[in-house]
Length: 255
Image (cartoon, rainbow, N blue to C red; front, side, top):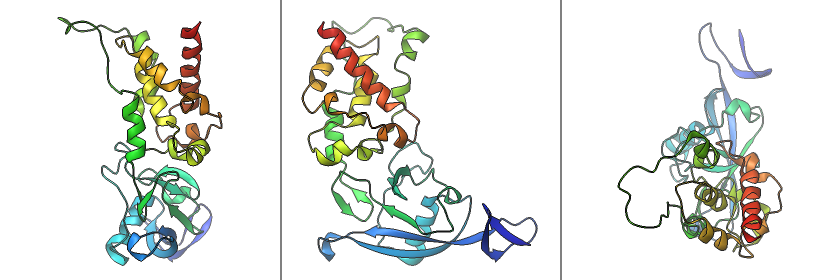
């Protein structure tokens, strides 16, 4: 029989019980400081299954065609967040993006996330991103001496900030934000999301400090509510909603 993938004819024929394969072309944005300041596009064609991920295709390119191709990846299961990149113009995790879901019958474009300096190929300098993350003090701040017993928290209190505990610091939300692209001082959605996680934690006493930090002109007030960040989040966090809740907390505490 002729193997098909989402209605498109495959380039190969599969016998009964076999998973059909097809040829997929990746158009990858390449950059190396040794080769000059300009980035270039390079195409690679690999044989894959529809259930393979973009990360699998990148591995085939690196292992079988061009060992110099450079990208980050670690757990390969959507937990570490290290392989965030732009795939067909959208921020995604390569390890969670199936080839069959990104028009495999056409060329798939792969490029680094925007707004951060590119070090090589698909690898960006994450230091500006983590600098903003550190600035919002992403840890519990408590008053007084060390507790002599556990700080009890109800299910309702935990639910208040549960959504923003899911952040894996992949930078997909921040690097999808047009304000972040053009304003090098903006904290970015991920930093605000992680501030939200502690601001609304009933065990934390540092909310006022964090709100003062985020009340800066480059803080939450730079958000233009475009929802790019929410759409880009691979964990489904309601990023825009969290930013609006931080804004509301500032106004409420001020009055």
